Amino acid sequence: MRREKIRRLNSLLEIYIDTNVDKDFSVLSKKADPFFIFSRDGQLVYVNDICETLLEYSRLELLHMKLSDVFVPTALNETQTFFFEKDYKELTSFDSQVRRKLGALLDVNLTTFPILFDNEVVGTYVVLKDITLIKKERELMSEKQVAAGQLAAGIAHEIRNPITAIKGFLQLTMSEYKGKPMYFKIIESEIDRIEAILKELMVIAKPTKIKHKKLNVRLLLEQVLTLMESQALLNDIQIEKRFNLEGETVLGDENQLKQVFINYIKNAIEAMPDGGRIQVEGILLNEDSVQIRIIDQGHGIPFDTLSRINEPFFTTKEQGTGLGMSVSYKIIEEHKGDFNVKSSTDGTCIEVKLPIMP
Ligand code: ADP
Ligand code: MG
Image 1: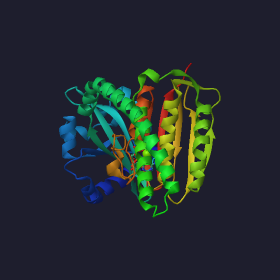
Image 2: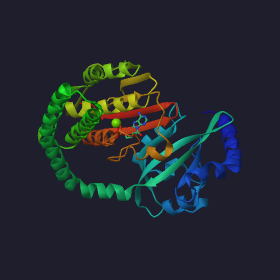
Image 3: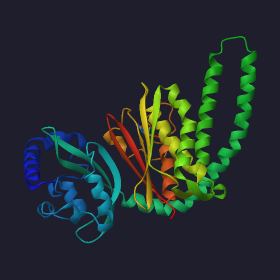
Image 4: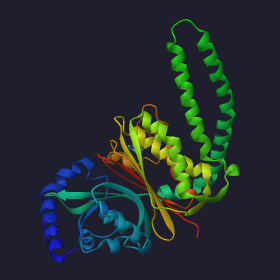
């Protein structure tokens, strides 16, 4: 960007900070969440108290720092592409790493959103969440979790058979019953719900059955879309494909990876009760990775829930299981991929990066 423009945007940002920060940030509970604001040239221009504590620098020191001083070099590249992405207009959430003054590295989850002033993006808010503990716990728990996951998957499998039998006999009874069918409908829909939960639980862990093989990404996506298209049409939703992939392959488990995209597309459909369009993009990002995006025109994910969507059992839906996102996230992690989400009230973009085979 040209110097003059930067200068102009920076002076707008200054006005914004003087007049609006306190007002806007009461919603984010100014005391609880560490946050800073940086300008379009990457300079920190505002930090709150708790951010000083988190990063161990004084406010004065922080205000002389740039993004590149806060984030560790390995995380910086990716972090910067997020901060300076072209469409820039949305809420974004992703994990990164910062270096504190005394040298310790800190895992953080960042939620960023642009500051619009006079119809221009003049700077960016960055809210940090310390996830060091969560990450450590996750590592410690992972062994236990694998065992518990296997157990859950095993139990889910065992329960599925009797449920199928119950469902079958219920349907038989229903067809012969002459009274009011209402109770049957409730039983049936509750059984459907149990089945949905079991199905997702079974995906969580069945390491013995996971087979990693060479998978053509484009083919995999096409197959997922064939599965999902009828459900989309029922909801008055068009799925638009945009692929610039040919024979690129990833190493992975076919069913698990399909499950990932099915989960995301399902959520996209559920976010658009009045219909609309879902874009499914598959592109070759660079020589090492492909990027798959699912972009919907739904109601979006509000700020305070954005960082929670990958938590197991987190749901905002009356009939939700809260497992789709967490299962998908786990699968992506296991495939050494990356997950990111962007959302505004105009819709949501789920972004998955996967390493391709040479
Ligand atoms: P469920 O769909 O059963 O609620 P998920 O784990 O799939 O569980 O999703 C968790 C939550 O994340 C949803 O309840 C919803 O609030 C939010 N969410 C996920 N994807 C989207 C989307 N595309 N649009 C809006 N909200 C979404
Ligand atoms: Mg879901």
